[in-house]
Length: 315
Image 1 (cartoon, rainbow, N blue to C red):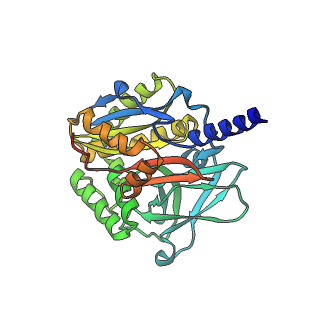
Image 2: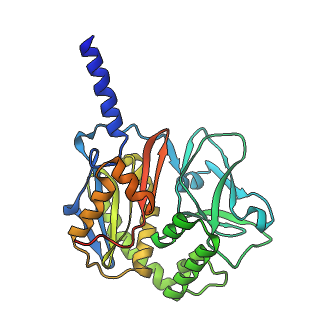
Image 3: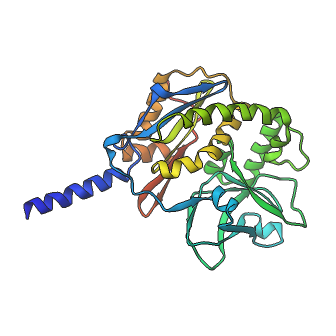
């Protein structure tokens, strides 16, 4: 009986530990960091002794849209009532993972998803809250919706900390002015029409995707640095959720480094202090993320932690 009770206690101890995204289950691999021009990526790996994560049986939004597993439409035709919502209808028995900061282009305006959510299979209409990232368009005709990766970390930070449409438009305008991107509708995505920008972005993506492809597949997230700052971090519950998100997520960090970044100068000391605040334990993590990002939980389990810290603690 005693042995049985000990087994039960051990089972729930392991289960509780595996539900965390802290140093108990992961480590920051400073020795495997990669730097290209204005961006440094430090992988976050799952500890070998952390056990196998339960994982989520979900399809990321980008893949779901490309495979026809979800249909995205406008909720209605009036901008005042409907600009902050999109209607999604699932087309399979798969749940769909949607992350805050992902951009959906088209419709009557380009939108950015406000927060993480799991969209369960349903025959009914489901609605996802969004913010507009294209101030100068509310067209009569609805364009086909498409997936447009993650926004950069400055825009995600404004979204997460304010949920204020006027401030989001102001940030989009600031970035367009900073990058000198030509546009007619004040669209965040107008940078993708700039050939010089696209060529530079492709260089970054080729470099980093090649590094990820030739690394072992234990990575569950990363810390990103540009100039003398940590520009953000994203950590997921296991490799099964991280790798499908990698390319669209990386696009946002590359955009941040290209448009608003600088050559990397930050040393590991301040980054380690940052990581300690984020990963030491759950109470420390909750406090650290409270005004610097967000923690998404599904059924009580930490699924995604991301931060948008601009100022890094000194050495």
